[in-house]
Image 1 (cartoon, protein in one colour):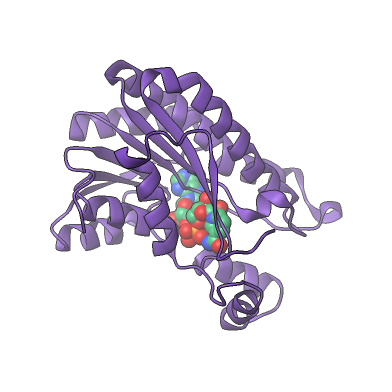
Image 2 (cartoon, helix red, strand yellow):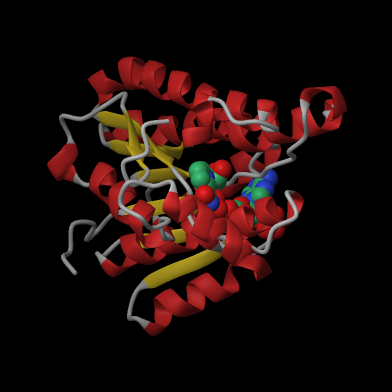
Length: 254
Ligand code: NAP
């Protein structure tokens, strides 16, 4: 593994498990000091332990990133711990799937707040540091579902929102040395997709096989596939890429 992030500090939200944990591990393996942010510091302990065992540097922080005061406190705590902040990965996300006629106000608000509002709040807080130091990288998690997915009106809207937010922040922050991009994964095997399988009455392994059969490369994605793309977008070699949402889905066109 290289050392593209030597001397850099990254904050990864929702990093206790799944894609966020893999992103945190990848950035740390390449030299970043990583703030592992999740709903509680206890939830992030496993990710921190894995990184530390590998010789990396990581600290767990607890914050609900859909709440303004918690976001302000989180970013302040990360800067107090590591002295700076260079890379923000907006990864925290939830699903509350339902067909429109059964979708409640709470289902809608929870998903929009955790998936989209959090990215706005975290970006607004981090840009204070990024613009001052004339350096920053924001990478947010969108989804293939942004193109439309039955039962996911709330989730699809939040992930399409990430694309618009990304395109706009790239324009506003580009002059300050800040790159803003998003990654839109297809089916990545995590607790989130396991929960989706159960919702539609399938065993997670069955859904994985169905998804793999429908994917041109004939496999589902792993968190490491997304971590590699996030790392590329967070690295200086991609500094002429901004405002983009990169599809990482094994060739599935929609
Ligand atoms: P995951 O396994 O469910 O992990 C998400 C993490 O975010 C969990 O640790 C969760 O904590 C945390 N989280 C939830 N609400 C939070 C909040 N308000 N503040 C801070 N942390 C919070 O999901 P994943 O599959 O790794 O997905 C990661 C991201 O990729 C999400 O944005 C997701 O929408 C996106 N994505 C995933 C897929 C896929 O196929 N897996 C595809 C496209 C996009 P708790 O477990 O305690 O709730």
